[in-house]
Image 1: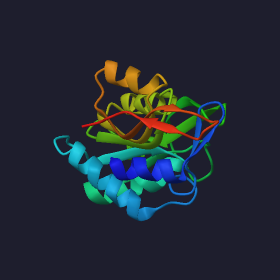
Image 2: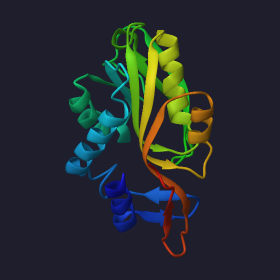
Image 3: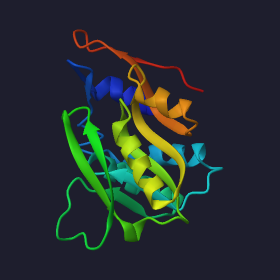
Image 4: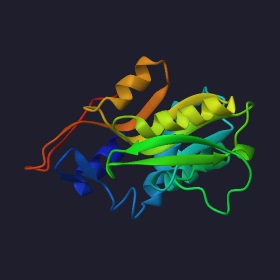
Length: 194
């Protein structure tokens, strides 16, 4: 998606240790108009998939998942990083390692929101090593639901996550794939996509 790539080039900040900071428009301050264009593109890319729920993880994925849900006309379920008094009953859970925060989270989804009849599209802001997506896939499998695909805003193509998912036969659609970054010059290199 050229518009997303242009926005990353303009407003993204390349940090050491392969960190791409896009908090001015994606995951702190949110450009909802850009989110609508992203959602429209995912709707086009997943048009042949039968989807009745979108699954994401708190916190950065929630905004884009909610806008995408408007285009798919389905609810959003998000995995919480902590069990609290608001979650009643049994939960599905998985451990996820955060690339940027360098810590492991136990994420949970209430069993009442996922069931074997669900066809689920995962939406998330970043794909690096694939830990978050793999954790969400574990939850989908535990629920007996069907994974319809994975929609990612920004994939770090030089890290292993996208390759592992695609090699396992998962339908992954990343709107921008970064193939390299130079923290000294701030340059960002994108993979050509059809």
